[in-house]
Image 1 (cartoon, helix red, strand yellow):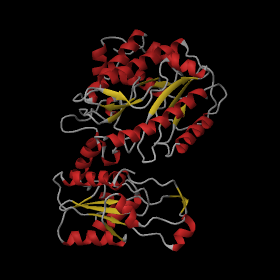
Image 2 (cartoon, one colour):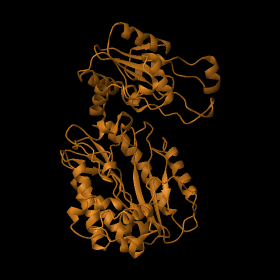
Image 3 (cartoon, one colour):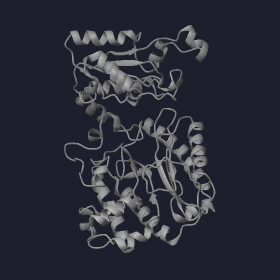
Amino acid sequence: MFSAATYTGRRNSLKNKGLKGIAIFPGNTESPMNYPDNTYHFRQDSNFLYFFGLDFPGLAAVIDLDSDEDFLFGDDATIADIIWIGPQVMLKDKAEKVGVKNCLPYAAFAESIEKAKKQGRTIHYLPPYRGENKILVHELLGIPVSQVVEKASVPLIKAIVSLRSIKDAGEIAEIEKACAVGYQMHVTAMKMAHPGEWEQRIAGTIEGIAISGGGITAFPIILSQNGETLHNHNHSQFLEKGRLLITDAGAESALHYACDFTRTTPVGGKFTTKQREIYEIVLAANNTATSLVKPSVTYLSVHLEVAKVIANGLKNLGLMKGDVDEAVINGAHALFFPHGLGHMMGLDVHDMEDLGQIHVGFDEEIQPVKQFGTGYLRLGRRLQPGFVITNEPGIYFIQALIDKWKSEKINTDFINFEKVNEYIGFGGIRIEDDILVTETGGRILGERMPVTPEEIEKLIG
């Protein structure tokens, strides 16, 4: 974990945001997989980690926004616990490591909230995403379970987003640790991309690399020859020569900071002419985005510039037609690029998405676009130094979408459907890097793994 001063500083920064009352932070509990004692790998709540740093189940915390006091609630291990899990550090000693002096039994959590209610103090909480914490908030505050998420404290959400959006040097170092593991995951997947290889063996191998790196995967691995399905978690196929393998995967560091990379690899080691042409367009889009990243630029504007790169490249191949700017204004590019350019990244691979994407990726100035394709953009607001973002353009040939647009005559002024039909079965190509917004521009985090066609072919060959 970080130093006690780091966690104390974060809590004090929250207290300086002008909120009154108390902020409550229920930690995560163990989550049963198929019966109570057989649990999934424990993952602490990211906001709890940010302010309190303790990666253990059965904890809760309160930040008193009107004083210098912070409270940690939890129970020490019993002898029955110790028999199964071994000797444990006392809770007061854990609390000391994160700068918390007030350490109480877990039952006192409910008592402290009841006291605050009787005093008429404002009780702030974040929108819970796990069922047990929704029920807990319901029991503590008397809010109907169905309304718990919508009644979460927007002032607290906005205050935390403003803090967590800017990564400090320690956080960036953790992300780069994750990036180093992610590099090994992807290079391994590339080297395994040979005809006859089972997708599941590749996915399992690189998940093992993430675990052996000290953390876990940042999200379920996306790995498939059917790369036109954007989040394809089906790993049942055996690789076929001449097809493309998309691998979208990342690792978490031991402190749960994430990386998120995507690479597209030709099975057998050589791009066909058609694959290389499309790949070069996506690579140009990726590099363009990196070059445009700098403080005060909106990521929405970067997304739209990338869309123009894609539309222009596809026009040169005869897949699109007409004026490129007009094509993007009309959303014609989204037939091939039906998602956003990227998102925030940090303690969560989609950083703070549990707090509501409208608060994380947008603000009063920049609101989400409702148009198909760009409507999936998770980050549109102005970039600031310290943001860590993903850059992940792609081109896909999705038959159901192509058939729909063709039959409904959508964007026929900009799309050559006869030419597009020649690419049915092509799959998809996505290239993703992680970028730190600096004072002057953007820096790719971690060692950039092979990305040009020549580098990829050399690695596999």
